[in-house]
Image (cartoon, rainbow, N blue to C red; front, side, top):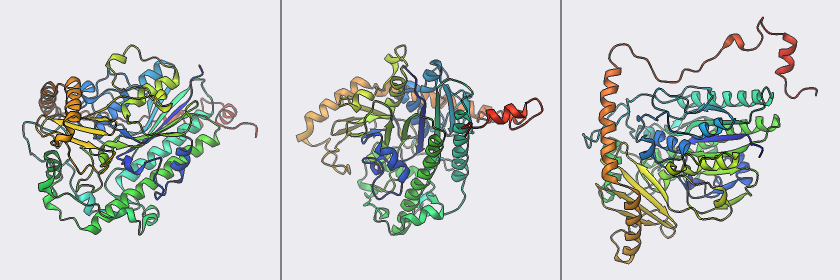
Length: 500
């Protein structure tokens, strides 16, 4: 089997409800819409965990957070956990990352042969929650609603600076790969931080959504009527200090949609280079998790409701006919799917992998219940969820059960867990959850991890400090033209196409 090139396009915090079958009609996203037209579109894809680092470790490994031990945004991703980059590299691929993956710990590659940029977020243990202090809010790194009240227009931001760099290095790498200096197939992962908050956008994208009906403020649920975890999230976001107006919510949603259009432009740039250099590749487009964007009165992620947990997933690959697939699937499934497309066996680690290949699902096969886990800020004990057909079941030892019929109640406004008419469904899903999760054991493991990291972080901040953040290497003496090179050979080798 010829191993195909693979291009993975990942974004950050993109709500999958806006991708019911590719980008919604009202989104200004022509490049993503063209990609959707030639892709299998998995309309009900769920993150493994609704937070950056746990979601990304799970995406790369096909393992849930309890297996990866990446419980939160400051938990180390162990070097001995195979990722799709390891599997592909072992099979002869050249593996490259441009952009964000939120690796925590001294290993900043995790199977990638090369990394073109640093990460946008810290690689150490500084963002560790603490179950020993329930209700504590750590102001210097916890989300707050300033992202909403500060929404608006700017031509450059921290996030824009980062993503512009990510796209530049990605297109540079595609040009370099086109020169054919080596015969290996390649896997290039390009991972952006948009449309993650703050909800600040360039004017050209902001103007696309003037008077857009979808920017209207959703109906919020009062604090007292929220479930316990939602109340904890509102408290973690310091909601009492922000009296949000309808206009502020409109501006935040407008900025978010505008940044989807920015991402669309970046995706277009990358795909244009791929086409211009006549390279073919399997293309995957997805996100790590979503954003509530004001639905239910909640913002950002950190919960299992649709806006936070559901993400887009589109795969354009030979042998996978473009179609919409409504079967619930997981970002856990991407790694075994890539292995299948590349003809790479994962048998050695399959018993410890939670994802399932999506090639059969794209042809009509069933997938089984989709699991999710969350054990980071806003929790006092680990949470777990199952999406099984039309049902979503949410379990936490500290909270009452939640049960929603997504088919009949897509906004998840009616908790059916206490409804006698649904007792059989609740019992079945509770039994399935009990079989899958030992929540007491999970809780103990998280607490032990947090306690260790608080000690280590404080220790490493005393005295000389050696950062784990990835430092991109640029060997300037090997770039462009130098005196140990033959100019004629260099100019010919760096040209593609040749002879035209």
